[in-house]
Image 1 (cartoon, rainbow, N blue to C red):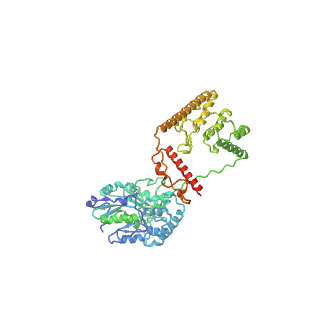
Image 2: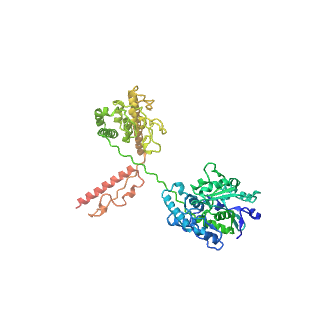
Image 3: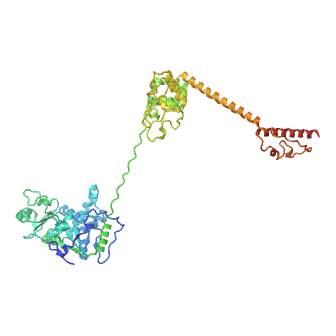
Length: 578
């Protein structure tokens, strides 16, 4: 496998590099995850870790090193405990935030297994406590996690990976390729970095209390550095930042954290980290193998959590209102009153109103809504029911107001139509109005008799109400007008009778003018012996109706009478011969 340095890449390789879109894009939509992610077992295929997210290895030795790392062991223990594995960058932040997690001497990393194991156990215990009270922001992860490496592809089968932290703006992926090419032209005086590690009271071979003095001595070199790499926990970061006359200021664009797990702060560890940062990762996969790698990577991601369906709570049913005795009595009176008006019981209605009318209000009092009645007044209810005598009593004696408007019907409510579907087709029927227009009691009348009651009252008491205007009564109907109408009806009936008589007289004349039918010849018949046969009964033989064909109804009746008379004479002769 070829080894490349990030600041000395071959020119022919730089010109053919293109960004790897799928792995670089953190918001790429993923396919539905399979129940068990498949592993690619081809010898030339990618090597991945089914537990750690985004772990892709170039060589077998890198995979073995990963299995021995704190990141992998932490994810294994977390998975066994029912938790979720974390990315490499998230694990680095967890390690940095854990105080006194990596302790020991300045010896090499081979002597730090027990200390590292304690650190992993502490992180697992801390993660268990956090999972009990995860906030929605902590529990949500993007479908494709962003790895520490950004990958580039060179046809036909070469890929290189560079740490994002090396770029001036790690969040702007669109400038990665251009900046990688600019890295090849370094400054004349060379590149200079500052790398600091502190943990467990150690600072890469220096005691903690001497760190700030050492930073002050390195002020000029630190100011000239292109990148400043710091690995420190939350409290240990105060050694470098946030104090008076600090060499490194907060928010410095050069500040970076190590994008991979580190060991105890030693000089050898700093050298290893420098080599890890500047060494370009190289793979050799064909485009088909890259597509397989992308599919395997996406399938290894955790399934997205289903969005919980929020079921709207059912509206609480209104609790029945407990009525007082007075309210119950009032409702009973209204129910009885509406029943008498609806059924047309006039005499009980008069008695009831004389006794209870003052308690219920005036004759035009608004009907309460709790009754369920769509009409506004008792007069409108009586008109709707079609009782002429009740309507006459309301208008003549009770002095009900016919100009009170009818409540507008509810839209799309067939049960609340103008007349309930029973409108008359008479000429004096009020014209239908569009919904929302003003209507009165007269518009509710279904029969001509009820409408005439309004017209008579308008003629008798013209000054009582605005009958023809607000009352919507089309015209008055006086006694003289009714007499004239009655005379016209009599004349029409008399004319009809005269026409019927004339038609009957013409029919009789036409019958007389018709030619009389020839007389029926009587043929002597032999004496009929006594028999119980059906031929001796009244009516004659079955061929009796053949001789009357073509005669008028009157002539057929005459012939039938003659036949019956002859039959009677024959029976009398038969009886006398005995």
